[in-house]
Length: 373
Image (cartoon, rainbow, N blue to C red; front, side):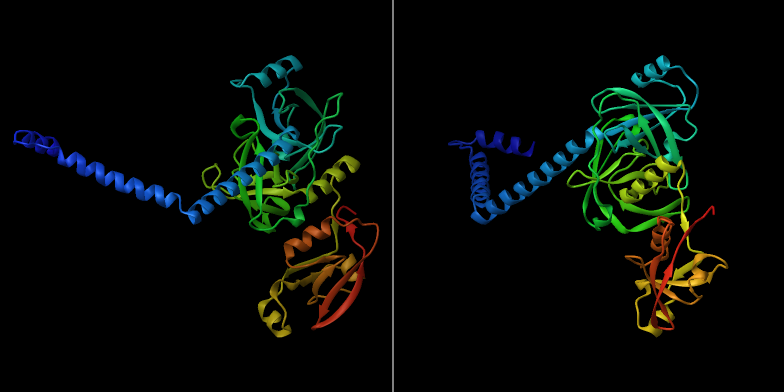
């Protein structure tokens, strides 16, 4: 309004010229010239082109990884009540179905239809159906499950080979590595989220046995049992849980490392249950005072706080106060990692154990037993 009033007054004066608009035009023209000349600076252009190239490269990597894994990721519908196959199929196609079912995700790990998901997805299910990325649906058969690790496996009833995920190396993953999560959060099939590995040394949760990968890739209800993959599109984990205060994702998600999933799956398929080995020893972190006395790091082994009678640890000569630094080929750095290594040991042979006793190295041989023996 003030500009308009000034212009009106100016028009009433003899020899009026629109000086203000000219001034504004000159000002804007000068700014535009400066902007253009700045944008054309060789250094800035090089930086801009490099940034665009890097962004396109990351986008291409994400798209390639997703495309490689997507055919192997399925939506899992686990019915909580008995329904016939016709009703089951209709529910699968009806997004508004109010039948009682659990919705999650799964990953096909072999062409003959072996599919991995979470125990809590298929727990107490009367029937299972899966929906493929291409829209096809199949029944799930021969369900086997391990509650303590939250891993379940079943066979997809298909007469044709199915697209299997490429298995990656979960032990080679490091903090800061890019990862993608694919699943069906809130019944939205084939949803992809991107993040990084937040912790690769292994987290533990009260209700789950074994170490978990931690990621900030978004995981929400329905993602359970879905794929965590690396930048090469290879499966490195099965999404299982989130840390939350409101039931939704808050930046901390967990996945079961694929090496552990493979071991559990093999046990379930071959034995119908997971056989876990034991040594009969309780271990704790090395006390800081003892670590300082021995001039070693706290995370350079585990402290033996108890040896149970008549079990492998006692039989091999292990004693309370020993520090276990290596079991077989595995260097030991935490009590959680030690327990994870021990439970997966085949109990059909002995393993070398390196310990420190009063600061002096000692080599032992130990043969584990299964927990139910």
